[in-house]
Length: 360
Image (cartoon, rainbow, N blue to C red; front, side, top):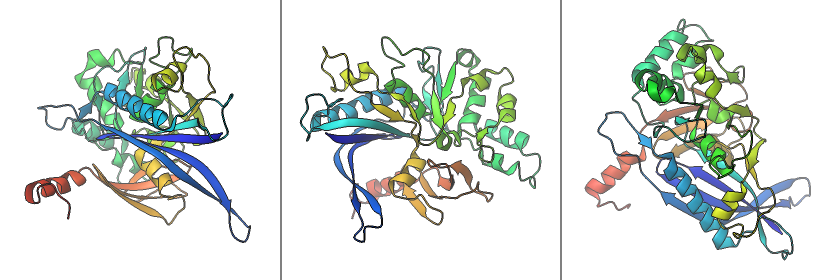
């Protein structure tokens, strides 16, 4: 059998997926093993931000993400004739051996006790929580010279925690129904594990990783834990504290692809009831996974990423202390990052206005 791993990125403009077959080779002198591999298939499905007349609002329906994930998985499974197990299968058959999710950072996905989204998800580019962001920074930053307070000066309106405070202040009826507050990639992991299935697995609960958690505005990169003081300041009732997902280690798996999802994407025929367990990695935020994808895994390396936003980031062994976002990466280290909110949309507007949308 030939193992295949599918990586999925749930982005702002669409969801993209690749199917990857890993392999390795030994260096000419025999001193090392180099991992190589082949991309076997790609798939994508686009969607848009929900229309609005409210300044600063940027929201999406999480159902659009789920539909796009189902679409790309089904396309890849069909195109490669993937199977979920190796019983009675020739050695050349591709076997789906794992799935990993990358997601747009900072989004706020509020779920009820049945893991159903309550309002639409507020995205990283939603800045309605500007006042809440300023309140958090002024409350947490005891002084500009306090090194312990410096980290919280980076809790901008796009981060998750100001959005939560905005919801508490502006949508109390919704907030009082919240059981879980998760990030986009956490939500997709939950769904793939069966949270919305006809018979959800018992005791299922959300998980996240330290990379995406660091974009929530709650994660203390020095302690490696959520900052309990900030959580209690935002919501003294304790609901927020109980709603945040458990942080897993970089190499952990968060669960397995549910049987119902195996049927949805064509891995199993309707009458088939069993298959090999297909692990789902803990995953991470899009910038953290971008660093892995281009091999930025050692200090001294940096990445410039130009998409809906523009970012530059690099890897560090220690939490950053300069005026950059103090993120964690997807390997157990750190990912100091600088971001501009709008990047290629500006370039696309220039192309549309002056070059009929054509690149030269």
